[in-house]
Length: 114
Length: 251
Image 1: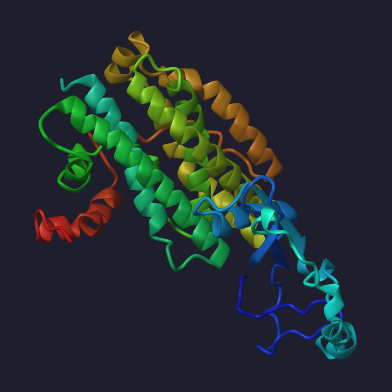
Image 2: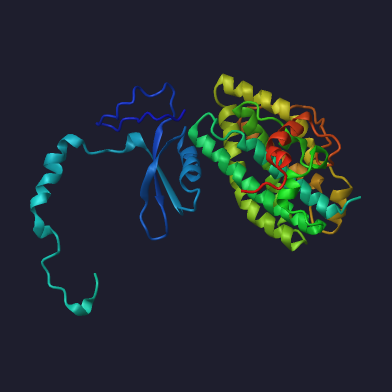
């Protein structure tokens, strides 16, 4: 029941690959923590009938080469995503605010590389 | 009689080799991508275990045969896998039922072998038991999901169980090889695993709303090599084709 069709996130449009297949398993987004102390990172998505199988499938699809110590699976429907149309108001205002970067301090040589 | 230890290691290695090859037949054609990868992972785990079991068998035999020689240069009558492992894949449901019935036994077997008086066997079991713990979780969940699924999937799983159940009994038959090894504390008596197996399998079948067949009739002849089913020969012609056509070919 896996297919190349993407399911739409709430409030956004899916890439246009045609309609999702009938009875398709829900789409899950998979996050994996590579090592203790690091944060979970998005690695991709997969289809699964329920949360338990999503974890199992993630184990088989995304941790075959010893990539992880922890898996999060989130049903894609439950992710709130920003909309591409809003990028002007969301991101452009920060373009002009160089003072938000900490590049105006003189760092003493003794500190070394930061 | 050949050395019981060699015989026993061939049984362990041939079980994983033959089942691994069967599972690998799904590669690229499984019903969904996620299952395809999961099946390939299982097949690879089993091949890894095969290398250890047959490698040790060759060492014990001491005639210069390594795991590859044992896998590719023996014919049907020298194979010692249980008949269950060589049964054809059928549909996806039948494959998963075969996997579960085998995995449930495999896990108990390996747990017992962890306590083997033979340090090499115990080390192999220690490594394999982690892989097989996952196998049985996955195949058990799938049996439950499909058994307690739609009318169609339920009916297919019941058919698979009815078809495969007569091959379960052989896993627990004890013979001279088993007795020789269990006397030395190397391996468990197969019969001693039955009760725990039945408890585990019954629980999964109940959740899967499937009915275990009444009859405990058991086809036998795989682990002794006396009478394999016709399916193994066909499988080996494919699996061993290259080495048969071009002996000692390497690349």
